[in-house]
Image (cartoon, rainbow, N blue to C red; front, side):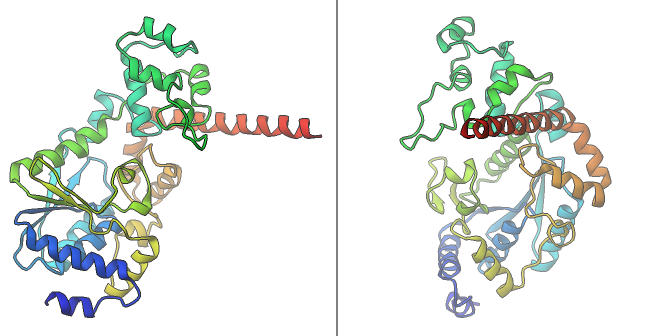
Length: 338
């Protein structure tokens, strides 16, 4: 089917979808060796369907990067996509799977950036004390960036919003860590060795000139905020294209209904709103995900609780601390008002 026929059959009530069809067609004509990352999530399902409308020349190599902690339902869905579209999806193993990364380097806590700063401080045997930056810098001269984070050394925005490079960006985190120093190693290396490095190695091995993946700006997060448009030119020779970058939640619903997109059991049966690394402690709703795992995939439930045991406990303790402090502040404010 040609481009004009595909456009005629596209949803009439979404210019965003029509634009993505036109641009995707142009990109597949422009590049010769294309990598499309398939996660098994709902965004990824739309991505594959969109790309398959035009890949008559079989330019696209589809790849699923297995982190070592994946839902069985996700792996089943990867096979389903292969059968539905008549494609092959490469299963790419992690350089170091998440369980090994956590055992070797430490467990992730709160966010990638926070984990990075804490890991640096731990490497210098930081004592988790509240002292001025200059004083701490004399004691830890090779830890400047992490100390700036700890001391809230970055200025607030013009609107008064706390900088994301300051520990105060996460409410009461500094006070919590002074009262409750981490008793386990914290690190963000699991993302590096289980996702980023395997993808980079795979791209270099096969010499792709375009990398296609399903990031949406409306979804938020640090990675999404790093991109301004759906396309990035890369001097290394492999450009990046994000076909559904401008899709809103309503856009997704229109596309799914119009083209009959089927998602994995993680969504339709388990009731999850999004998927990723199973049980990732970075997720705000990891407790809900754990409950779903316990009910539907008990083996995975036991695995993630073993891998992330310390960080789960520490995160729960931090959330309890924040709630307590907020209640105390509210009581003080109410008392002052009265």
